[in-house]
Image 1 (cartoon, rainbow, N blue to C red):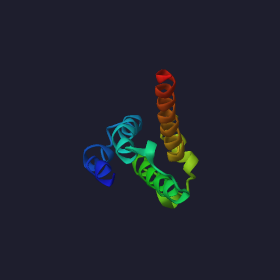
Image 2: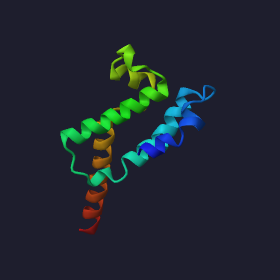
Image 3: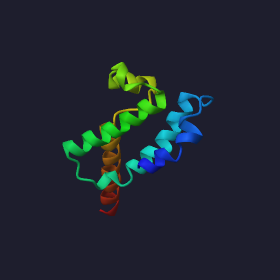
Image 4: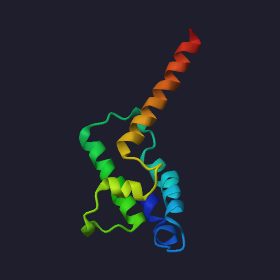
Length: 111
């Protein structure tokens, strides 16, 4: 997961000409999909959700160029990065509910 972000460090995240919206779209498409691959089947604990959320917000702050010393709340960072960005727990819940929906449709189609 760190390598997916690190490989784009010089080519995308550090470039001033690319808009924040484009960076966030690439972050969601590349980094979050790598980070959350297979999350539908994970057993989630509070500690693991907290660590994933820390990773998510740390790298959103890097993309948005928000300094940690500024003491800007996480909600403001999510708003700065745009409306489609949500906390990692919402991503996990959405993926798990999507998987349950697929399983339920398969189950009810076989009856």
